[in-house]
Length: 127
Figure 1 (cartoon, rainbow, N blue to C red):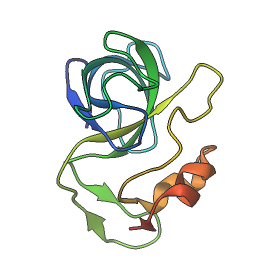
Figure 2 (cartoon, rainbow, N blue to C red):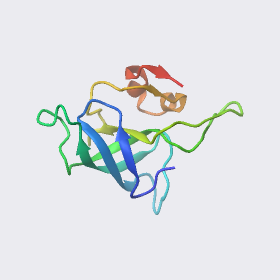
Figure 3 (tube, rainbow, N blue to C red):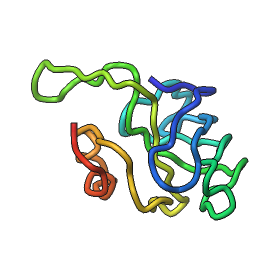
């Protein structure tokens, strides 16, 4: 469950490391976002090694797709639930294209059923 003011990790190679949620997209007065939802973020911290050659710059505003949350993810078809260790996102440009070219780690199966199928194919695995 992601709210306004939540810090999140970035799991792609766009150059950003930590971001801050500044708006939950997808409805009037919507307060919480879950896996597969879009949010508006601001870049707060960059990756240290490639600070000068990054695609994302500090202070820029992007859309982001939520990939992992610390709260439980319920499965659609059975009664299983998965709890992950971090809150993580992938940066998306204004044209709904990925900013990075690689995704680190596995993504939940729920991402497959959104319009961002490319994220599931770029990841290393599906949970």
